[in-house]
Length: 188
Picture 1 (cartoon, rainbow, N blue to C red):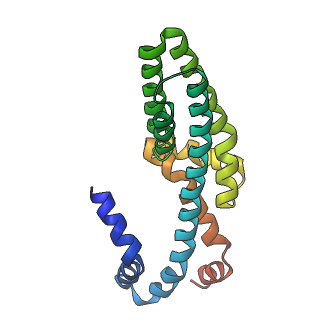
Picture 2 (spheres, rainbow, N blue to C red; picture 1 turned 180 degrees about the vertical axis):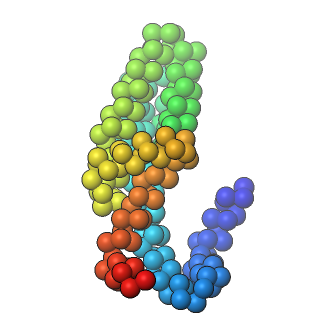
């Protein structure tokens, strides 16, 4: 509930909040922070759109498999798969587990096993091929860099690190690539 309320505040007053936050820093740093903010917000926005695209592809293929196999509530399970994309590792696991349980109860162990196999296959293709490509394009980073960032982030900080690794790496690269940022850094 707090996230929803904060989301409303950020959408309607995020610029004022950002201006207030940068005002808390020393006067010499404020302008550079105010210039870096839109770069960081742009990268994060592109990352969230990338997650939504990856989740939609996962949901389509898993939902289609569930529908073909005759598993009941295939569409809600596909929607849950899409929502699960926003929670790395845990979301995909939870959505896949729920789909397998529904398949087991409704169709038996063989169909449930097929659902598990399809889910694992889609997740492997998504995690090793699709996500690095989509995130790489969205974040202007090569797919290999995305994979390495996710691996390091998850190794150091677990699930939260896996989720934040790509956008953090991309924000750092975007800020370093800005000419005025690099020049300002050289002056310091």
